[in-house]
Image 1: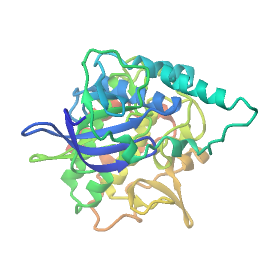
Image 2 (image 1 turned 180 degrees about the horizontal axis):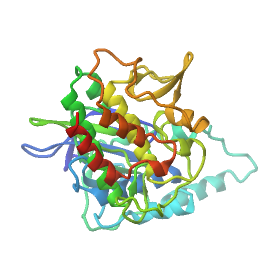
Image 3 (image 1 turned 30 degrees about the horizontal axis):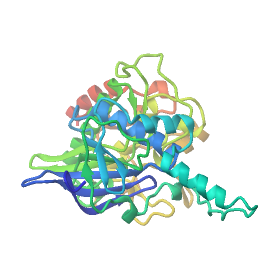
Length: 384
């Protein structure tokens, strides 16, 4: 790693990996974000491969989708190897398909030796199992090799790949929550953000990519002289539908696994029904509404405010999708008259309010496609 990139500091840590701020080696090296994904369970590897495949599909294809610069495989304590840009690491694909972590011949021999020494009917010591979410987070010191070297770019990735390193463009503005809530309300800035998000979604859906976990935490902000540039990121839960979704065709690919983040999930996902790319449009509607009106909430176990619309019933806040799952005829009040974080921006105009209502429809077929949304948003902003 030291021959290619310099790791400077940790900037984020989640259930599946660690993100570092780094810099390309050499004078004037570009600042990058480097995400370390430890390959220690088939379930995690499957998510990593999905993210890698989507990022390669979109790589540097749209200004509002995070760009992947490089992918590296850690194949030894001090060895990093480039992964070919035109294929996935085959050993990791095999692990994901078989559902077991492959072991090298050296490890197998070591295990055989241990079994022979324990053949006198004395059971080996048992390891304490932890929940999957804990097991997938690598220790920071263990995840970062002290000294690494890059090997031949065209070499085949060996069987024991202990971690993937994704090198991406760096976004110094943080995520959308941090960026919006750290600045005073600005109508033009809000409109810039939602236009860019709309454009990114039209691009992703045109490639047949359904994100499935859109939320402010997964939108990063790059600061430029011309203003903020938002970047849709974190494609671990994304799916490739295999066909363009941008023209609003009736036969949409359907998904069944429930995934996403509570306050942004569509009603059909909450209901456990099959769903399509239109679930992304609902999530985007929640985000648009929150950005335009500066609507925030505090989720259990979280210490910082988050952007998001919701249903307020008594003392408790209910995710909007869950409330609409329970009552599809729920009437939305747009613009929201209360519970907005001061200082307040001006409320969205009638055209924008109408568009939000369509994006947040309980019936997925009543929502605009990503392609229709991009055109409708441009018209609505001209009518403010």
